[in-house]
Amino acid sequence: MKDKIILSMSDKKISALEMYLTQRNTTLNAEIDKYAEQLYSKTVLKNVREYIDTVSSNNQAKKTK
Image (spheres, rainbow, N blue to C red):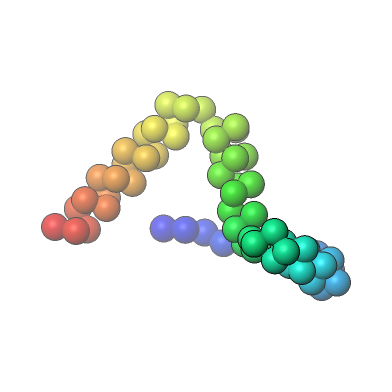
């Protein structure tokens, strides 16, 4: 399950970001996702991340059966 995060930023800033990110062949969503993953990896302890990955994998395996 995924949660959503809402960010507040002026529409002009978002438009400018999207324009320049397009020139770099990426999107605002892709960059935010990448940053969120980096922040998660940097902040959450490795053993906790491994536990979450294991639980997520087990839940996916149960759904495919």
